[in-house]
Image 1: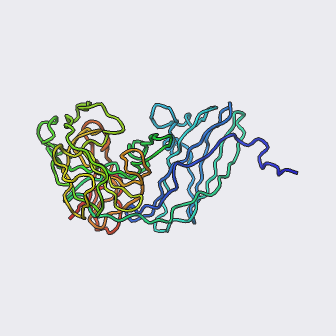
Image 2: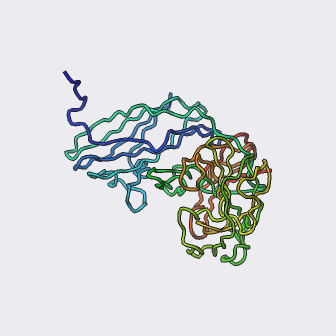
Image 3: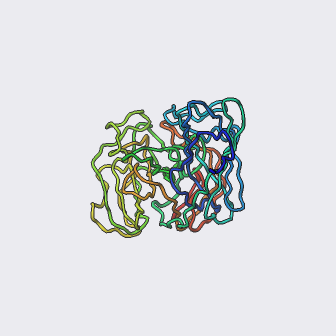
Length: 366
């Protein structure tokens, strides 16, 4: 006799995950950033009431407005959901962007999830998901890519406006999130009592404090891709000098293989400053180029991330940590803005070792 279903009317929702989560040590705490995809195979709607995640001794429940802000409807406008938008209509799918803060605890081997949904008759259903394996691989530790004081712009967070965190793209029939742990490095100063990234004409790249700063190799490895010669964008103009596509979004850039299935991308370099070519073996601390404003870039900055494929956009972003420096806690900022950037209050810096910076933290590298 066949086994009976625990729920006589099980919700016709299929739950998958973009990638196996891997632990990140960020601002001294262990965190897991990963993405759940929920697809409705029915012709009726379900309301996502709550998501629970249990990671070792840490149980986290997401509901209400907090859950709504973690959801993105596939094919939607790209805006975060409000309370009413937690409805998953028939034939539609959503991504839930999850962040688990485990504090000083180590990541467990698996995460258990349960969903509470309401059907079209407002009847509740609880869905238990098979345990999700967690990667046992530790973050790769790399040297600083820059020197001096920098803002770790749009570093990993679960803010609804986190651009890198939500940049899911399709290539080769696969959904990728290469920029999961990407950082846009910028510099700021106080000008007329306001924190800003430039002084002088806003539409000149030379006005920006980080422009033309040297970029240093974070690890030894082999150059597997590079591009130079793309002209620079006019800052905050709302336009790019070339039409942006998958192949040129990184602008002038290099990709370096630093370990098996580990590639570092340095993007948006100033034209004519890329110092290496494909096939070169480079060492830690070697200057590889200079900060610029090319490709998909609104103002001068260094975009850097590590993923498992030699591609800017078509790979799975993996955690990493920097060897040492000083860093503040999280800072309220809109570093992904296409116009002038905003920076909130910045707290004191503390020394760190083998850590990844908090969202928009002020970081000093030596």
